[in-house]
Length: 139
Image 1 (tube, one colour):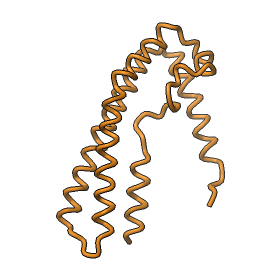
Image 2 (tube, one colour):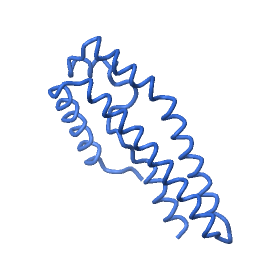
Image 3 (cartoon, helix red, strand yellow):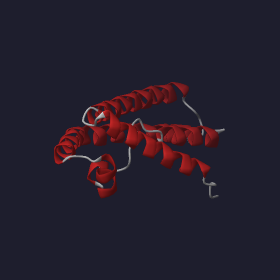
Image 4 (cartoon, one colour):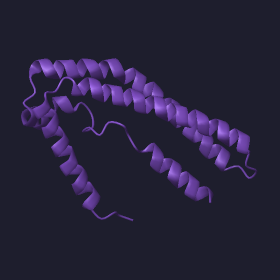
């Protein structure tokens, strides 16, 4: 039962709010070309990222610390339901704050792109996600 709980916990922590390419995608030549991003747009996206980066680092660390604490409690021989509940609430709150900050960064970045650029980006991400889902899982 513990292993199932940990597996569910690890899966849930891997879900991210912003379904965007990794890293500074607005600087990747293929994406710049595909979306026809202007220098001004790239600069604005960079500013949004820099303004958000420290918050995201702190929020991810907070969620990870709570995750580690929860795993530690679940591994104890004698489970303390009250402690687990407190940590779970703290973890849930941390994830919610992280999700909200990522989402607001996405909203800010979305506002830099025009509708055509956004639709192209979404179409490409959807295509890549479908390709990843169709690949057989390695065991």
